[in-house]
Length: 366
Image (tube, rainbow, N blue to C red; front, side, top):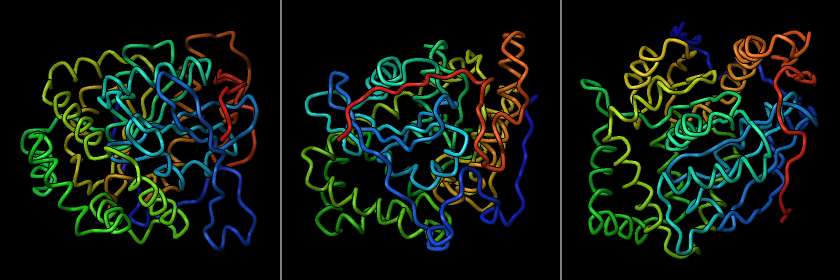
């Protein structure tokens, strides 16, 4: 049964999960850059491999509108003590340049399907934030064989009556919906704001307190912004994805039916003070899907994985060790005799034998 759990107010102080870094690195808040890889899926797709134990549950992370693999830089290292973690750049975002390809929600969901089939090679645990949450929902509903379970972090959801997004956000998306207005707005911002300033603008919108983002993770976001400023047609690609997202969210009944069709375990996490997707929208989704687990991060915005990564990691690991393990045993009573401690919530290295995932990930290092 779905129930809302709210963490204590000192949410940012939750204990870390995953393999602990050396003491000097932990004190400095450093995150080692992951291995960068490429795969041809009709378009050259960039992804990163954060590592993790061989044979461990495989998590694939999907960012949101305007995001990239660096959105997972704070969370992923907290999970690799007992999980294998990959993060992918959607078409038109990060280092995956679209060229002449569509950046729509549908095009990216189709790319994700190929990624899971050709790179992951089997069912995975999908983790999606914002638009990546919508893409994760579509993938789980349309290709249930490709997912073991899904984590939705402040997913893009239909607006709940009486719970409207921030006025600035609503105005921005209203302009995105009109091609000429959206294009003019983005170009005007680029004329007066540097790539680093634009990246900080996004973090201020998405976080209650951007200072919670560690300095090295922040620098990864700034470096991504600097690099992307030299890529062609990034505004057109962003607007194509934004308009596609708007169209999906407008089809409220269809979207709600798609969510209801998911049979895999679902963990829904949401920042209490999200300005882009209101907490009311997630509460409505949880109420309509009582089998989902729903937890709220107080005083947190749209990207808990950046603002409170320790809290986010602890919820994911505990859910994997309990709900997901029980679900798999119910589906296959002969799956084994291992315990819920196969996914260790305190970060020790365990085998995860109940959660069946691929043991080999294919791709080209670059």
